[in-house]
Length: 119
Length: 108
Image (cartoon, rainbow over all chains, first blue to last red; front, side):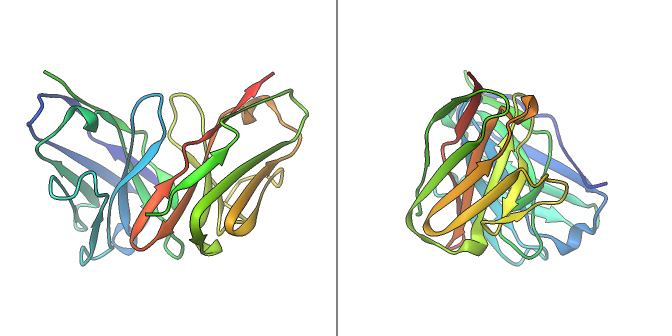
């Protein structure tokens, strides 16, 4: 069974940093591109970032480029998101998602973790 | 960036009725790269349709997707209580991915 489990989020002050992780199991992690998608509570979904299976390519939404860094450790089956210079508008539930191996959709999602940026 | 506009924003229907949800793109989207998701309160999104018309694993045939170019449709037949949720379309283009703003299907 595919499982994606995000680490706990938390409360961080504006301008601060936070790192999220996502532990994957039930599939060959190193064969899949992985992504982060976020959702302001009660609002819609926003793609944040994607990393290729071998970390060779990374992609970011304009809203986070230069502030967030996606990475992965295939030996630990873990995906990461380093978030720096956080803003109030980064407050959201962050989901880890697996990208379909052949298509461009997200076929499995974690349960999400809430990140709150506030003073 | 391709913008996806979903309509209507809210669809009020009774159990047993059918639903037709629209997703319109600001530029042409490859059919291979159009997906639909269902999200219930407090839950992560669930993939329903990929490649515009292919059902994901375990998704019943009451859900069907169609369309091409800039106009895509998700059709749900015979709504059951568990189908009342928010539905999002999503596209991929130019290394970027965007979602529509969602259509809420609520009980009338």
